[in-house]
Image 1 (cartoon, rainbow, N blue to C red):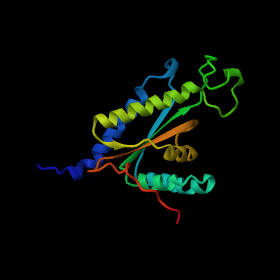
Image 2 (image 1 turned 90 degrees about the vertical axis):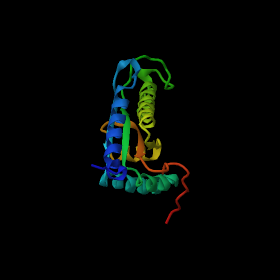
Image 3 (image 1 turned 180 degrees about the vertical axis):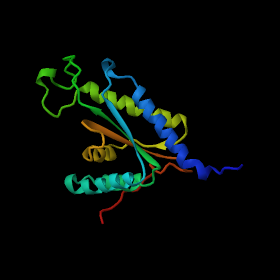
Image 4 (image 1 turned 135 degrees about the horizontal axis):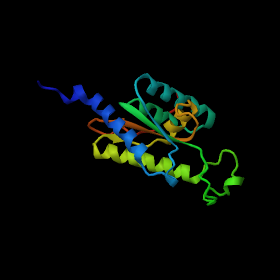
Length: 177
C-alpha cells in the first residue's frame, strides 16, 4: 500500500489538534484550579467563525479582523481556548483590585495567566509535531461572541495548518469591500 501525504494530511492535522487540546488541559493552573475550556472547530464552523469576524468589523472598526477572517479559511481546523472567570481568592491585587472589590468584567489575573499558559502549551505541542499555527485574539473574540465556550470571558483561537508554507504569516491586509 502506498499512501500519499496529501491524502492523509487532514486527519493528521486533526490528530495533532486533539493533542493540542490535551496539552492545554494539562498545562499548569494557578492554585491547581482548572478553569480552562477548549474545543476543536472544523468544517462549516470555521466559515461561521470567519463570517462573525467580518461582521464584528462594523462594530469596532478593527480592520485586521478582515485579514484574519480570510486567513482562518486556510486552516484545517481552529483550536479555541478560554477561561471561565473564577476569582482565586488570593486578594493579591494583581488585577488592580482586591477580590471583594473587583468590578464586573475585570478578569482575575490568575485566570488570564492560565489561559496564556494553556495557549502556549498547545502551540508548543503543535511546534513539536511540525504543524503551523498562529495565536489569534480576533478569532478568539469572535468565538467568545458566538458563545462556543460557555461562560468563558477570555478566549483565544489557534488556526492549524500543514502546508508547504505557513499561511498565517506574511499576510497582507485585506481591504473593506
